[in-house]
Image (cartoon, rainbow, N blue to C red; front, side, top):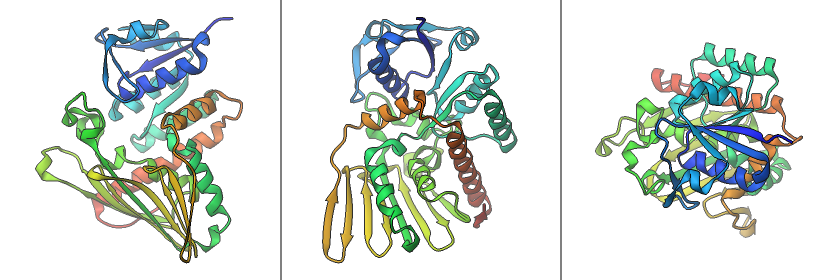
Length: 334
């Protein structure tokens, strides 16, 4: 039986994580290709430290190539893990060649180009998925089932996210990261967007939203370092407060519906508060588990192209409306 051929565009931290997990899951069944201008690629460890071994020595089933067109043409599936501003161009080229596509989040372009891309994916009927791995986190799945029971009683939702970009890749200057450079598609809105996707997964697209970006001039970077946003649904609102330069790390989603349910992905727990009683559910999970679950789903019989396209369209609507809200300084209807 011939091996499945997967081509990587981008072999930084995100790309190498997917490479490592795919190799563990299906080592004997996959041949990896990667497009690289420079053939020397350093290995990044599981805890995001540089290892003193070339990537091609660690993964014997990885071939590096400078020939972009040939690598895409001879592969069945394309994993797009390059900088944000390069996601759409590569995905569109891959769709033109009728390839299955996994693309790291976010996925955004001009509206006409995006809609044409979606039509092509629908015609091709090939797998397509945006890498929002937190939907596959066991605690989020549990959380979704908990609040579903009292969904009609929800009156407020709060999302608090603090991350600290200099901690992400300690082996390189954070100001060179895509997250901190406008030309590479950086900024907090596009970078710290996992919770936007989780809210869409819980409640769907809101009636309207309003968004305001926050800047820190002291850092001397040309992108926003945080944002505040509000989603308005029929009977409740969701309030986002996001900061990607705060050392007080948080990743919280709190639902108020008579009880209080808090999903804390930083601490790895769910809290359910009833009056003065606190019930703790969940346990600390290996961070790679959500990525493994995502990859397994992408290649499994459970995969749904319909659901993937709904997710892609919903996220596009939010990005499009948020950018308009920032530009015109007003709420935007969806």
